[in-house]
Image 1 (cartoon, rainbow, N blue to C red):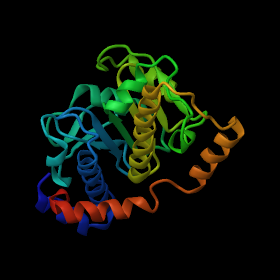
Image 2 (image 1 turned 90 degrees about the vertical axis):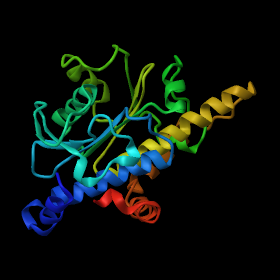
Image 3 (image 1 turned 120 degrees about the vertical axis):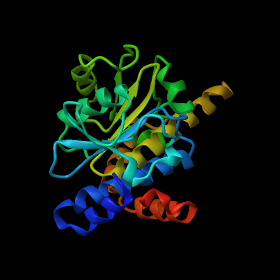
Length: 250
């Protein structure tokens, strides 16, 4: 999609939802690179286009800091490219699995961050050590490693592993978060990755760990949900990207 066409979409009421989604998703890619959650050209973030059985995802071969609203690829739930270039096949399998099963989900985010990779390899998974990890008390799910996610057969198992949760640890692979908004998916990933990094740091001390009782952890998780993650942070984060490099809007 050219920048000129994107501008035209933004001016058309019926298509403005796609234009807004493109800009927000491009901002999310830039933010992911800014915070160091990217992995060269790999991993993927997708966003469902409101009112359509289609989602936007990154083109294969682009760094996250190169993503613009106009170069995102539009794909339907069967894997057909509706507009744009080539996509990562693992991206389609993972993201279509969630978008097909979870109509409440607007955005799906998958990363290979150091903290996430480390915790994904631990048998005990995410431990309730600090406030960031309390947010996921009884709310994080796990999916066994099956190799590179290129088999369509894995879609149902992956979606089943996530269930109605918003955070999934892919064993020996990385992290996945979803959100009703792009901002919610990003902030959930931000807190999940930070919880993982803190866990590795705490375990490295070899000291006794202080853990609050389950009821306190549940209270913290509910408070986080009531706060509507991403509602306030997202606009501030987009302003940051506008300050750093507004070309994501092109």
